[in-house]
Image (cartoon, rainbow, N blue to C red; front, side, top):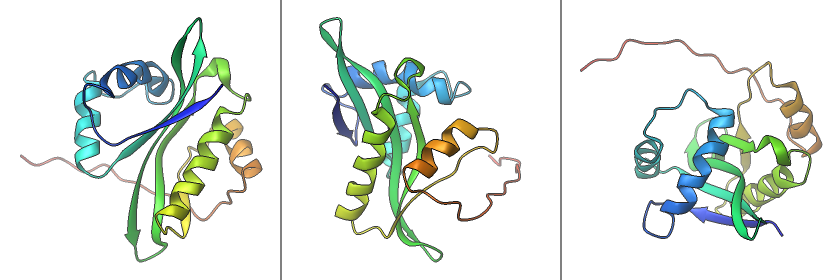
Length: 152
């Protein structure tokens, strides 16, 4: 049975779950820094939150999907729940994990008075786009970026 866990900090209870989540998260973001927990600690300190999807496998609970998100206000959307990362492990895709995560994110957005759940998706991710359309998401606009030099 699928269970969802909301995590906002690293502690003795959440650390084992986050260690498990790393492999799933890297399926989407293989380029992440080597120090996954340090990176999450910084993201949590800046308002990021995580919801993990877990299910029993071989007698123990395993992470099978996750969503990294934050709630904030901007001048375009108003208060929104923005999804940084949404991933289901490859072996569990099309098994309801993504749907459960999106449903939870919509409900959490509503609880937190967000007017939208928003995410960006790479242009090449056509399977993800089909999933988002099935879940009721629509294309709102383009996302542009430019790299800038870091200053010390």
